[in-house]
Image (cartoon, rainbow, N blue to C red):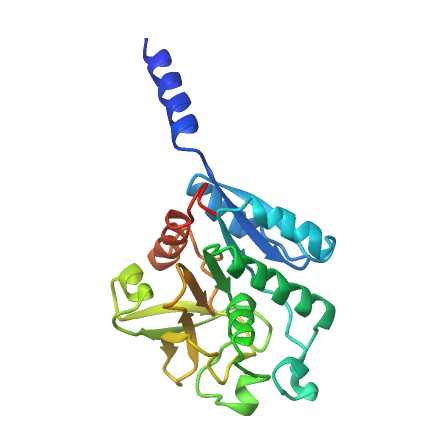
Length: 246
């Protein structure tokens, strides 16, 4: 009898409360950590690898998604925002243009969007913002945003009041991981800052005029299991990814 009850519950859950589909846009990156976090929230991953898919194929995969994550990755071509080519690391203008087109397509469909690290910078560039090509050289070396041996650093952030991130975090000060040498310089049009590190660098952004658009500079997927902010952020995004409405 108990087995029948459990089977009935699973059948009702899967038919009347279907899994949401979350697209992950990346360029041949390891997305296993993001996948684990998404599946832990009873959502299904739609892998959108721009390194092996043309733009039309990416768009077709976006069509079936309830929400889209733009993952971390390489630097951007500095010509996109008037940067210094001598300070950037690996980048691909072809992939940058493709990702900007995918983001534009998502926005046209009003898809919920979460940008992680490069994904946050992508959102900023899309709205006309710019980047520091090298934070330590162009902004400040007061805080380490990436260890010299290319491992994760950690630092505190201050979260702005009256933002979605504040509602998610339920605190105005928390520790996050950090793995980047580029960062937001000039904020894109219409975006708001929802968190900064103690050196003043922008660590999170939102678009208050869009149904759901959040960008964070850290990687919530890396310490998802032990970090409450990471769990709350990804849970909030998936909860607000509207199955069947896009």
